Amino acid sequence: MTGEDKRQALRAAAQWLARRAGAPDDSALHHAWHQWCVENPTHQWAWQRVEHLQAQLGKLPGDVACQVLNHSPTRLPELNRRALLKGLVLMGGVGGLGWSGYRQAPLWLADQRTTVGERRSLQLADGTRLVLNTSTAVDIEFSAQLRLITLRAGEIQVQTGKDPRPFVVRSAQGDMQALGTRFDVRQLDAGTALSVSEHAVQIRLADGRTQRVNAGQAITFSRREFGTLQAAVPGSEDWIKGYLLVDAWPLHRLLGELSRYRVGYLGCSDEVRNLLLSGAFPLDDIDMALAAVARALPVEMVQRTRYWTRVVKKPE
Image (cartoon, rainbow, N blue to C red; front, side, top):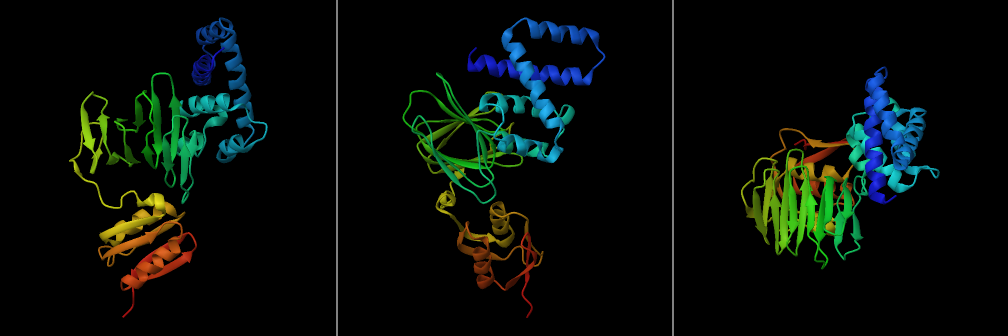
């Protein structure tokens, strides 16, 4: 029973669980499920683990079920837990699995992830250097034919290792194949932003259209179309070093970027949102960054709690 056999069986078991939960009195469905179970020992193995996991989660409050599975010393082996959880969550919630935290499932279930304000650098088996920015989640799949990084959320920088297998980063909008390169990929709400520092990256959309992006270029694309190729913004990869370099940014844009590295609300009033400023702002100490903003502009900070900060016009 190979790892791939287990993954496929767990995926199928999760689907059977969802179908049976949706039609508990369907005798034909029950018979088909029974036939599936007995036709292969791997199917029986997978079904037992699905039932076991459902029983575990059904005893827990929805908002902590996923957290418990990720920290319990008695949790299932990693392959079983991750593959099964992904199958169950993506089926849309079954029994005790209708988590209130469903929208965060990719972060919880990813192979590698970072929390708000955290950055992490990884050296992969092929020599690739992968850096995860704040609130980032990725899945990593290396096979004999392909090296695949699936970006679930956030932002990464990739410097590919020397390996004959194609290296692809997959976002919600398309695939980006590295052509021996260093590049940055950010998952946006409705698109993907790509910036290439070395060599080139080939983007492929679902309909087969491609776009080559060379070193020094950047682009944002959706599932249906490519944006305009532009020059990469100087300092766009400085987040790796722990600071944000800005040149004549409106205040609201700066605060929007800084808020990625801090839990809670960080915003500004309309009367100051378009004030321009330039400089380098630390990402590991947002209070220090805000102090620099207050020195550069006629503004002050209104802080209700440590999780709520608003920048307003300074009284004259």
